[in-house]
Image (cartoon, rainbow, N blue to C red):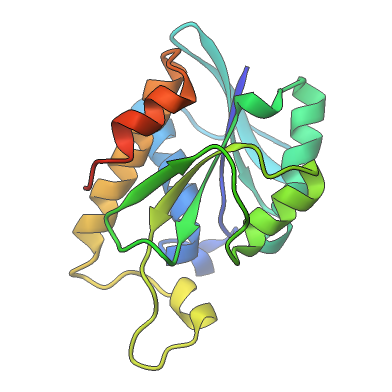
Length: 190
């Protein structure tokens, strides 16, 4: 079983904001496969589906970003998902809008959702897709930037990046090793 978790904040207030890019990618995958979130447990909305030969758990925590690990760890335990079978999708300030970056390990880089996951899992070694949202400009604070929607000129880049991130997830679900997925998608730009 594979577990795909998109990070974000629950509620209409946060829909379409930069910090919810992980939710957006999971929604993209659900739409592609005509799925809906069907269950709630362990402070997360989720659904289990078969994609090709793979059983997949799609997850959107409703813990709010800073406590994302509190939803992930219980779901991993309940469904007996191994560390190498999770994939976390989230926003990244250090990547320009339209870029994605895949990694298998690394620090939180200041991202509170990833800090929570690292703390709960006791490890930095898990698959991840970072989707670029860019740094704030014009004197904006980081918190205001991540909780704001994308500008009209950035929206097409973000939509393309979300598609690319979803393509990378699907390629992984087809049975490709995550290193192969990284080699294929790290060089591409939306």
